[in-house]
Length: 163
Image 1 (cartoon, rainbow, N blue to C red):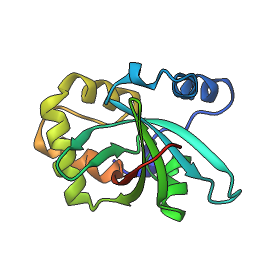
Image 2: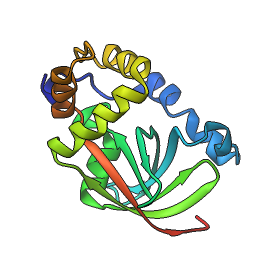
Image 3: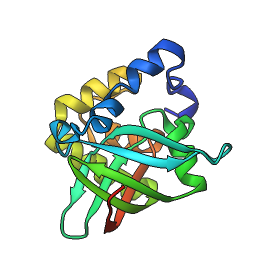
């Protein structure tokens, strides 16, 4: 599986549906989504304009204050391209708002994060693999292949904010 085989990010009406969770945060209801999702406030790499995306949190390191996410559309995801250009971002998890530094993990580091996610959320990972057309059978080898296709990003919290 390569990133070229991943589906394209949604366009048109599907993109609007995909972005609907942003409105939960805008209405002050981010707490309803708990710690499984985060609102990413980032800067467009071409436009320089503020952008937002809601992405799934696949792991939290509470001791180091790091949130981990996978780019489900690989390197084609707009938010992923944008944070590669400008890694300084603001995130919101639940009602907690923070400034953070985004860092793409190595494939090996990403594999460890995905293996942990597979252990804690096997059904969610199976559903994600179907949606993204990535073969997943629960084996360590399939987790390894998935880590090669899906970039894993660590959001290192730097400070609480009032974004």
